[in-house]
Image (cartoon, rainbow, N blue to C red; front, side):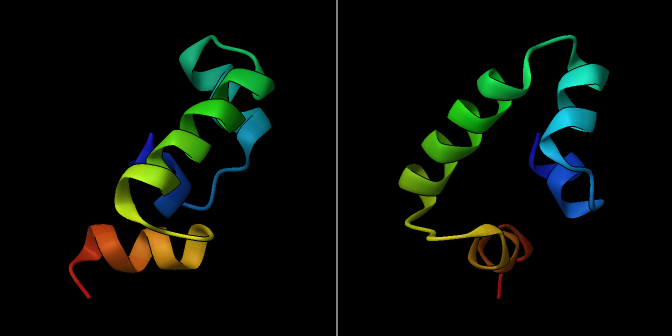
Length: 51
């Protein structure tokens, strides 16, 4: 899922690709933010890229 965020996909596009609802995508992303101590997509992308 992080790869799709990195590729610039919005939550609707991610949901369609993974066959899940946009709300489910949002919940998963929020959980990823918590686990990586990220506050937004920019911080998440910096975290997963090793910056």
